Image (cartoon, rainbow, N blue to C red; front, side):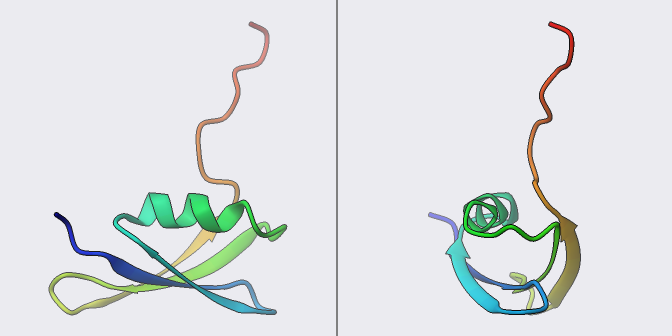
Length: 67
């Protein structure tokens, strides 16, 4: 089984930690509990490198218009 990683979300006001297998699953679980439009995410990779990214929310498939 894959390694569970700890993702740290900081939206400017509060910091929350989420444990998940992948980045996408962590963001999807976090975005349901916040109203922020963007969030800073930090996590430790397999090789020991700390990654940091600013993610715009919501993340996911956009609905098709006109069908």
